[in-house]
Length: 216
Image (cartoon, rainbow, N blue to C red; front, top):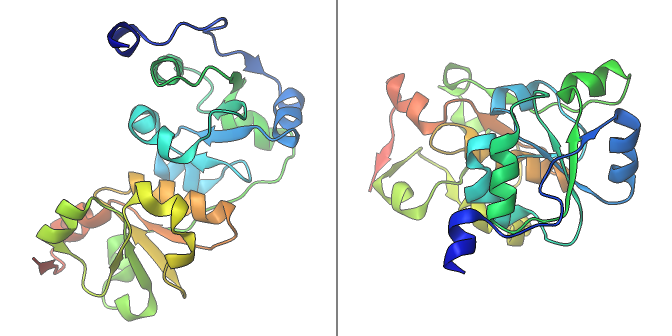
């Protein structure tokens, strides 16, 4: 176990295969899990329908909360530089690596396929109109207990898959520390038919812009 934790679980095929758009779509139709590893702003601007956004550097920490070990994994990125994701998949035991979309998301929309978007709002857009939103804080509870945006409810992002029914109703706006985990949450909810926006920059941007928080 110690050796596997350090070096990764031995795999028969430790490589990510480049997939054409038709091959990618066929795997999707067969139930593959689609993970978009781009940053939140890129994902929000356009993504493959049904994909979940787990940014590349956060893959190892968060993939296990949202992805199963049975269905194949297909990756959408910028079309290159996916070796860190491959290594993360090996280390946490995802040996059903079907491949990645060759050419990245650009190849998807250039082939004329449907695209989904996600509302991503800046702090100045929502300041002064928080009463229009149902706010959901998906940070760790220890961070929440230090300070939070007034009126927000809390579900840690890792607990969200088992608590979809507990998500606040209404015009849902999700925030975290900097916008990465909130976009995971929003993409997950979108896959369950729940519309949600993500706060760009999260509570860090909110505080730096001089807006108030509730302490304690």
